[in-house]
Length: 389
Image (cartoon, rainbow, N blue to C red; front, side):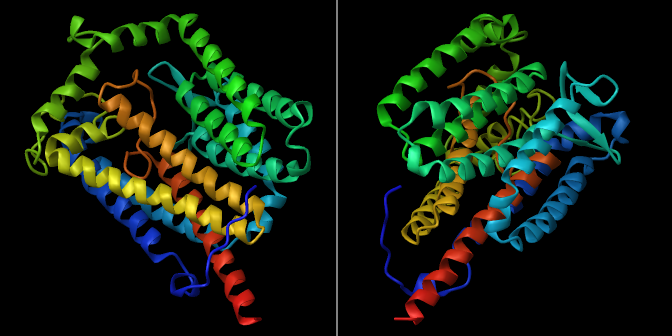
C-alpha cells in the first residue's frame, strides 16, 4: 500500500471528524423524514397495522435509536479488537446466512428467505454480513501484504470463502447483497496491492459469471428483459420501474413539495424501502436528489481520506477497512439510485442510512462508527507523534 504524508494541521488536532459525524446525522434525520412521508399512505391503508399513519416512522425512529446506541458501543472498541476477532465475526455472519435457510427458523417474505424473527422484529443477517466481510477482507489483505503478488496464496483462498458465502446468499436469494460483498472483497484486495493485471482479468471473469447467473435464472432474466423496456407492460412486469420513472418526471427541478408525492399513494411499491429515492425526487426534485448525492459523496470521500491518513501512519488494516467502507457505501448507494432511475435492473438493495429497515440501519451506523474510530485513533497517533518532535 502506498504511503501518504499529511501535515499535522488544525483538523488533525481535533478529537473527531465532526463534518463526517454531522453528515451521518443529517442523512439519518433526513431518512426519518422521508420514510415518514413515503410510508403514510401504505400504513393508513393496512388494517394489519391498525391504520396508523405513523407506524413505519415510529419503528424507524426506534431502529435509529438502537443503531446509535450500537454505534456508540462499536466506537468504544479499539481497532485491534476488530482485527483480532475478524475471523470469528465472519463465522457468526456465515452461521446467520445458514440459519435463514433452515425451515421453521428462517422467515420467508415475498418468496425470499432472508430474515430471522427475534423478539417481534425481523433481522436480516446479510446486512450484518457485509460488515463482517469488510472486516475479514481488510484483516486478510493486511496479513497477506508480503505475498500480494501470489495468486494461489492470496486470491484463491478468498475466492473459495466468498464462493461459499455466495452459495448461501443465492439460496435465499439475495443477489444484490452478493454483488456488494464481492465488490467489497475485490476492492480491498486491489487497494491492498493485488496485481492489477490479474485483477482486471478476474473482474472480467466475474462479470461473465454474473451474466451466466442472470441468464440461467428465469426470474433474474425476466427482470433484465423488463428493465430494457418497462413500458411494454406498465401494469405488469414493468409496473414498479415505470412508476419510479413517473415520480422522477413529476418532481422536475424543484419537486412537488415535502409530503406531496402522488406515486407514494399506493402506486409505487416499496416506496419507503428500495424506492425511497424516487419519492425524494418527486417531492424535492432534482435539487433534493443533488443534495442527497452530495451528502453521500462527502461521506465516501471522507472514508478514503481517513484511509489514506491511516496508511500514512502505517496502520494498514485500518486503512483498508476505512477505504472498504467507502467502497461499500459508494457501490450500494449507486446501485440503489441506478435502479430507481431505470439505469440498472431492479434489485433489493436499500439506500444506506435512509431506507426503512432495522438491520440495514444498524449495520450502516455500526460501520460508520468504526470508521470514526479509525479516524480518532489515527488523529491520536498523529498528535502523539507531533508532540514528540
